[in-house]
Each structure stands twice: as structure tokens, then as C-alpha cells.
Image 1 (cartoon, rainbow, N blue to C red):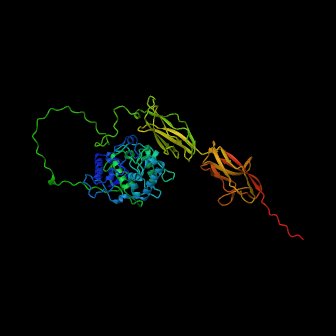
Image 2: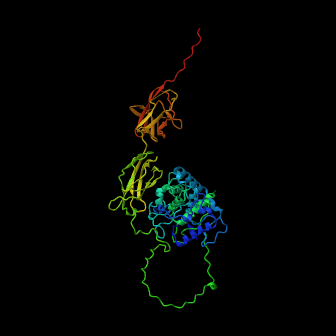
Image 3: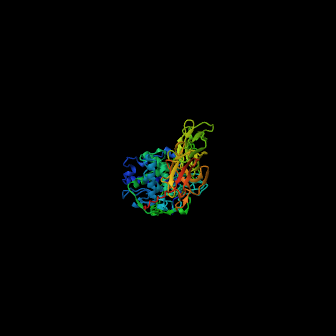
Length: 589
């Protein structure tokens, strides 16, 4: 039998029992760090699912995970029913590229969100239970998995029901969503949580650098401080809202904190226990299967061990029959009769979120900003009832969508804001990146499936309305100008950084045609050129041109500097004749 990386959670009573027993086994083995560490963190068993985590979709869509636990401290753990797999010290080895991705993500979050206190060991713990460290480190040199890690479709048949949100872009399924990659993000979460961790210009959930950085930012949202147990629990539960999942991740977190080491890619140990083991009949792609052990069949009792039937007792006088109770509703097809129905409908007063009928634009117009600048207008959305009344205390998520490096002032491409008493939520200030073009900011109601509101935004190239610098230079024919030309571009009086600049030697201020004689620059091959393009001002709006040669012809010439936005500066170049040596007087007779 094979254990499949892509199978989704069918969580039954047996799975819960095994995971609970596993935690009990760790406690029995005198592993104190599982229940409390140097910061006196509370026991994992005391943690409860957080309201924050339950109020919005999880990163994985509550997908299945590997239930293997780290090696027990005691060589003789207490016997349990369904003893969890707990293998040897090889479990401390993490494939080199995967480990590097975790540590780089920790460093990035230390700079971007220092108050989060994200340890790379937490990413390793989640990576372990989600994909066995990218299937034992089967990744290429760039960190992309050799073959995609994709789960079965979430069609509600024993799993969550999540209809397609990415048109099959990540999971190849245009009907339903599937979890993807070594950190098992569902496409709807990756759309706003995805990151480019290896700076290749793409956000790929199957790349361990991208996935690890995305997981770090996901765990650090909502202002959580992962050095405190309560926030650590909330963050983990927001990734997969299961108490057993929390216990398993915390066990691996403490194990990796005690020590780990780097091993070659592709040599990591493969987990075998799954939270959905034995459930369902889904058949994921063979490309994501890994070897697994098969449990031996239970021992059958011998014939002579069969218990003899008990002697029937003397019948008693039947009591008066009672009125039969109303039969319970039948179990819906595909549900687990041993588990409670998740998120039962409330019969009390509806929450504010439940009363929202639609989300509207609260007056935001077309958004435009110059690359590197902050958008002047902040995006706002209004949650309304069917009657058009504003609804307060509703969480609205604003997500930057599209091929852009624009982000909110927080540095994130997603922000969740609660509506005020009038039903309006205002997103943080939006800052344009260096990439120009159009993109979208989408507002949605957290916890409801309602049409979102799209806000169109445009990032334009930086421009200048003025360019400053020397207006005259003098040199000697057959040589070079002593000073290099330096200019400074400004826009509305401030430095204009990243502005495109063209420098051209023209015939005259009235004739912008390129001059065919006089001063010139040199290209990489040393040949004369009289027009330079592709120039750009620095962060201070300054630009220094390459060395300028005078040429052999004396006279007056013009160098025109032109910026994006139409600002120009004409510099007069004077070329003097070369000095000739005066012959010395000879002897007189």
C-alpha cells in the first residue's frame, strides 16, 4: 500500500484517537519540552482552536497531514493502542535546499516583521507534517519540487468543498481546488499569501523558497508574536484548524529546537502515517506517491478462545412501552457518522457577517501612482444588508492581485480590516512598486461567499518636471572634457528617482537631429556614439553621464538631456583649438 501526499482530510474517530494517544506517549516518555519549554509555554493539550483561526479559510483547506511523531526520549514508552510511528535520529536531518529555504524565510521575516519572532524550526515542523520536507528534499537547484505535490480535488466527497478559484493555474483543475506544494497551500490562499522567495520574478507554490516565505508571512499576520504560546497556537491552528494537527506540529517544533542537521537533497526520510489513513477512495496522481509500510493484520482469536455464550436470564415482565422519540435525521451521504457536523448553522441571533448581503465600493475612484510612490487615495469598501444598511464589525480582506510588486504600507499584499459602525472598511495605504502596469485590488468579506469588489490600479513610470545641472562645459579639441556631466531630476520639487533619461548631442537648440561631428561618447567597443538611452536617475534623482570626448573640430555644440515627463536641459559644449607649440628662437649671427 502507498501513502499519498495529496489525499485530503477525512477525519474520523480512529484518527483522533491515534493522534491523542501519540501525544500521551510523548508525555509518558518524560519529554518535558513537549509540554513546556524555557518560556514556560502551556501544554499543547491545553490549547484550543482559536476563534481567529476558525473565522477564515485555512492555508491548507484543513488538508490531511503526516501524523508521524519525533523519536520518543524514553526507550520504553508506555504501551498504547495504535502506537504512532517514532523513528530514529535520522528524523533530525533536513534536506539542504529545504533547510536553506526555511532559514532564509526566517531571516526575511526577522527584517520585515521583527515582532513576530518566527523561528525557522516552526517552518520545518509544518513542512514535515505537510509534505515530509518536500518528499525528502526532492527539489532542483532552484528549490522547485521535481514533480508537483498536488492533492485530490476538494469536491466535498468526504473532504472540504472548495470550488475552483485559479482556473487550474496551480493545480491543473478548473472545477475544484487542490492543495499544492511542499507547504500545501490551496490556490485561494496562495492568491494573496504567495511570495517570491528566490527572487526569480514568480510566485510558485511548488518552489520551497516561495512556499516557505509565504508560510512565514501567513503565520506572522494579525500581529501575532510567535514567542508567546497563545499566538503560536493561533498561528498553527490558522494553518490547519485541528487540535491533533497543533499537537503534532508542536512536537516537531520542540524536536527541531533541540537540534537538527543538514543532509543532501533527496535523502530525507519519508513519513508514513497520515491523518486520513484508510479513509476514502480518492486516487491521487501516481507522481506524488511515496513508499509506505503496511500494518500487519490484527491477530484473530483461536477457536478454543471463543467466549461461550452466556446463559440466558429469566425473562421479566415487560414494562409499559414509552412513546417513541422522533427519529434523528439521517446522516448525509459522504459524511462521517462518527464525527460532529462542522460549523452547524446557528439558530440564535445572526452575527454581523451573516447579515451582509453584498459588498460595495465606498467611493474609491481609479487608482494611479508613479512607481515607488504611495497612492494618494486609500481603498474603501462598505458591507451592506439587503436593505442597504451598513454593517459594522465585519472583516473585509483586501488583496493585491496581478503581476505587480505593489503592496500595502505594511509590506504585505493582503490586509484584513474590520468595518466601522457605518459598514466601511478602509485599507492601509497602498504603495506602488517599481514594476509599471495595471493590477487589481480585490475586497472580499471574510467568512462569507459573496461577490468581491475589484479596484483597478495603475503604476506609471517615474517622471520629472525639471532637470538641473551645469549648462556649459569647455574642452580642447582632440581630448576630453575634464568633468563628467552630472544632472539631477526633480518632480514637484522632490527628487525623481528611477526616471528614464536620454542624452543626445544635437545640431542646435532649434534642430534636435543628432549631430554627426563634434563631441561624442564611446560605446563598449570604443566606437563614438552621440545618443545614449536606457539611462536612469538614482534614489536621489541624480545621474552621472559617461566620459565625454571633445572630438577634433573646434566650435560650439549642444548636449540635450531629456527625461520621462518631458523635462529638458541643454548644455553648451565649447571645443577650443588644440594648443600648438611655439618654436624656440635659434642662435643669431
